[in-house]
Length: 451
Image 1 (tube, helix red, strand yellow):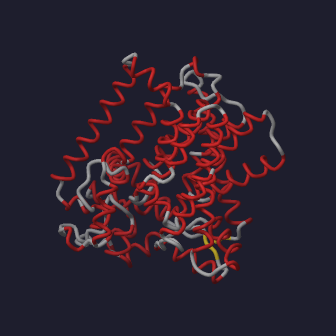
Image 2: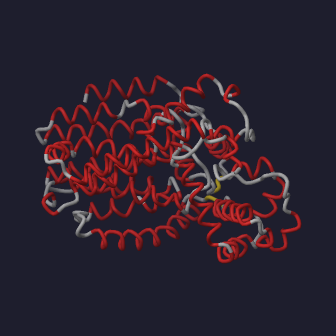
Image 3: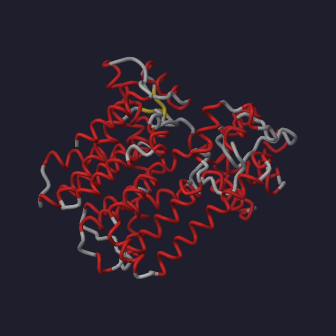
């Protein structure tokens, strides 16, 4: 606990009062004005509003998120200690100070709130299993954390169902995987309108056009990749063909390069029908667009600085325009073993290795399966629900996978000694992904950012 508190204070002071990103700037404007919309998570903005009397600026929400973050790591470490795994407990606490995680948690972004609240839920579940009972305070706290994590990102609805199944007694083994996936899909479908209702009528946020942004991004991807602008319907003649509006990296290029056209079509009442029509007419182009965006978001086969290049509208620029800090951060993001592509392989491999029936009644491994299933489904959702590329999107995947690896270390050791084929396959796949990523960093032309 002492180690955790010291690391938390050091983390808070390192970049106090937090790195202010563009999304957070918009949210702070809403905090000041008291007028909210749901393009950015109103639950985070509302919490920020409640904390705002304490201090102006980003400090209150920054400290609140980091307090959740470190509480999660400390609670998990403590629970492992109480299960006679003191060294594993210390390692879990120390994981919180991993540079790549610190690089992300110092930012005032929703991803920190999501990952921290979900990890804290897992820690509280382990505590309940040890004590053998749910207290009223724990029930309320878990409900608040799950609600916050669910509402803080639109695609969080895919991460919540496995955690709910964990709480309600599911062991989440491989044998029960079909049932887990079916129930998760059902719960996610139900949570989508429920989240919208809460955002609109409980949190008082007006529609911000998030769905329209996704639909327009998809439609423009189809137009660019199929070469068929007719899918734009009445807006086809307005399409700025020579402006290269679209990049698979992020939707921001649409607003930067083709602002007027973007604002006109994205806010049109016809956007949903245009989107559906484009996908129906060119399903392969839609699939290619989604795969290109997923590749970018997972930092798989991409050139150096690919996000910065797309954002700056410099499709063939050279790295010197990037700041020294930007160069360091980009290289840290580009360590192959830390990419979302590598982490998803590791997460799936870990699940397969601890999901067998022989581990059904081991409480800490049940927690591992809950975390991994949640993180995998959440990450998989980016294949269809994503409009940008930021490493912070994989924060929950990273935290869940790294923590799970420590908790499941005894199982992994035994499988390594036994030369388990699953472990060997996972290691081979991760090595292959790392080779692909390194090759891309040296060979892929920066024009990828605009195809």
